[in-house]
Length: 274
Image (cartoon, rainbow, N blue to C red; front, side, top):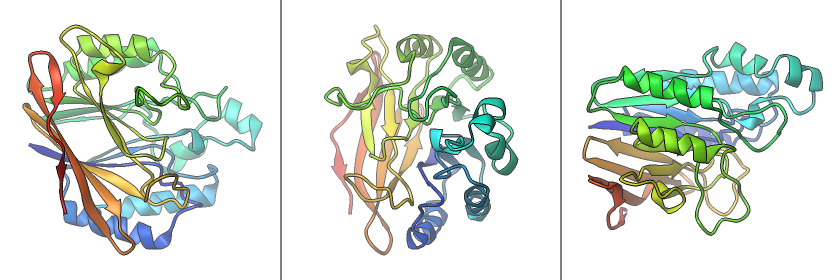
């Protein structure tokens, strides 16, 4: 079994320093095997904000990490930079790799950049990106749980009429079903949520787990407190533990459990954990 720490929407430039320190403590206590950061490391893609994000990443536990950019990591004020040198500062301060991949015998994680120049908010995935991720998964161990990381969600709650899914998500999901993706991690909405993909994408014999993370340290919370996800994965089980800011520290919230079945990953009864 592998443990993943899934954090998102840090928004340095609008961070709460107390929560930042609390997150670093909580990540240290979690002893995750891999840390996943699903975008929006900064608020306005400014150098000062990227420096703060870089310093934060350097303070995290020294384990492998998979990081992708979000729409806030591209300048909205400098049109020339946005068009000609998109993600220049992200590449300089965070990573040159916009398609990060990490794997071992138990888990394989592919990051995909869903930020698009013509949109300051919504995201898109194209066929080339999907094929590259599936090619990366083809090199992984046969029993490895396959995980896709994006900033924008490939799925949202069935009753959510406000937030769109990734453009071309139907194409992407059909292909990801063929290459056996088990788990999708994303952020963007600042809400922690766990879904079964089969509700929106009814593909025969396939159902993946979709997990959104809230905003980890930003003051830009919406309808819930700062949070992140502690996820344990194995060939037969995915366990999503919500970590919720309680004013002084992150505490354990509800846990969702999924089991592998002949028709894909199916949700089991939710557990409340103190």
